Length: 118
Image (tube, rainbow, N blue to C red; front, side):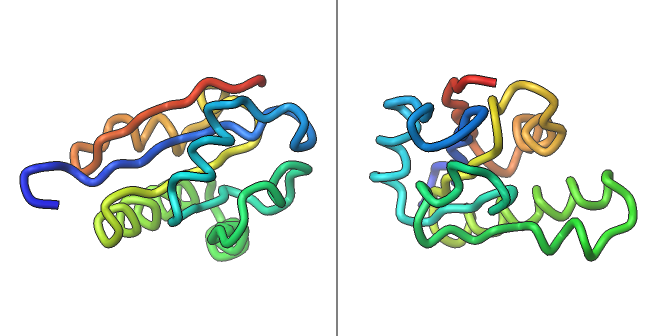
């Protein structure tokens, strides 16, 4: 991707099952083949097929700050490798999502945030 930053499309999975996913999130899931789930422990996680789940990072790190740094490192590395990735989080990506804040501030990637129910 010469001349362009890798892109991270950040989507919220809403508060419950797949019926509450937005049209924008569903379109992003359909369009972007490389997908990351913050956690597979969410009722709508099954709507993001073939995603890399990051649950193991919570077990590997004692401090949440380290978990968030590891999430950002993983998502950025995947974006750099593939050009674009979908990063799906529970609820809304703009409500209490520290890793999203870090991604938005990361100069190595271009970010797009899709609105979702919290």
